[in-house]
Every structure is written in C-alpha cells, then in structure tokens.
Length: 74
Image 1 (cartoon, rainbow, N blue to C red):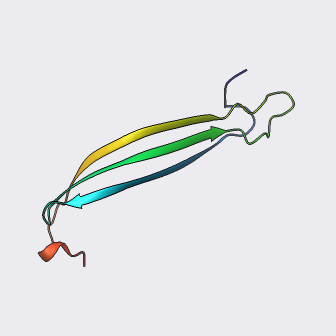
Image 2: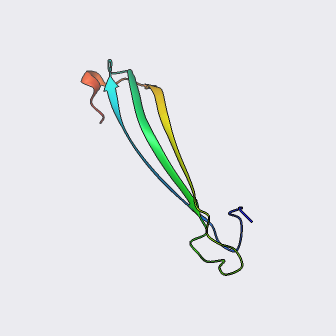
C-alpha cells in the first residue's frame, strides 16, 4: 500500500553546498541533499501517490590525485 515500486517510479535529487580548498591537493566540503521518490500518480486509482521526501547533511574531503600549480584545472 505504501510502496513506490508500482507501474512507474522516479527519483528526483537536488543538493547544495560549499567547498573550501585548503591547498591544491586537499579540499573540504559540506552541504545538504533533498531526494523525492514518487510514482507520479501513474498507478492511480489502484495505488495512491505517497511520495517519499528525504533530507540529509553531507560532508566530505576531496583529495586530488595530481595537484595542479596554483590549484588551477587545465
């Protein structure tokens, strides 16, 4: 009844954040992500569209395999 795996389902994801470059090789970042899972009302009237919304924080460290001079990407 509450599942999203009927005739049709899709996922929409959006995120936003910031990244701070410590040096040309390392950077840290933080942000937030939003995801929506829905059947887009394609299975009605048999199944209603009980869309699922998920919010969550993200954090990370970026490590470049090869550092470019002055941090510029060629």
